[in-house]
Image (cartoon, rainbow, N blue to C red; front, side):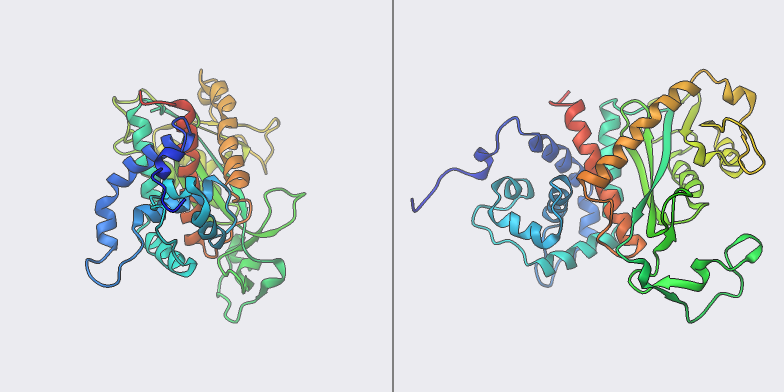
Length: 357
């Protein structure tokens, strides 16, 4: 046949889950249109439309495409991908170098975090988010570097970051592949690897991600990142999607957050800590909760809901391919993690709302 009059729109089944994801995505992109206008100049050479660029990156996350070069190859022949991104049947696919350079522009505008917030806002409008009960957790993301890449620094700081100013490995050595990556292990039995720490805050009703970030690896970073995210979320004592004043806000977490500074930080934010406790309180592992916090009526429920955040980490690491990042630098890794968190929410929203409510 020389001509075909069937569009990609007709090729995609009506009940395909990507149709629902496209609807949620387009609503979020509509909210970001003014932000895109700030990033893109009105004159000069034409660039890749930011909406198409972001949809293409979502395809990479949703379908576990291992690289942007493979993504461009798939966009050339996969009609489903073409339809989702918004490419016409005879439209030429972008060069991978041009695609990568345009992605950097979205990085400068912090678009991934704002895209996640736009998805969270839509979920809040549908009544899918808890306004009072949340969970925090962190996980280790292996960096795009090896242990052999760590070399001694030419210039050392006068005072180390260890206890009492003690010099630690991060003060004396850094990776030549990714200077921001640090050797770190989550458990005493594990192997120290070049890594970053990724953090999430989820609500306890359906386990949807409401906040995410990436920090350098370290023993204090998990608690500090959680407090920072919770502080950004709570505006005048309540979350942005709350329809009424909350009675009380609770936050659950594992034993890794059973630290005096973190517990006191939660109390300063008027948050009731529901942090798992050690079986035996020892000087090196103290339990910091008060009797009223420990016996709170929602404590057991918060601990039961903790597994929902682990499911998010599992999907992001294995389905989205984030067990080892392919990017270098904390800012780039954080941007990709925020986008993966937004993609995880979109997958969950298709299940929770198969059709418009």
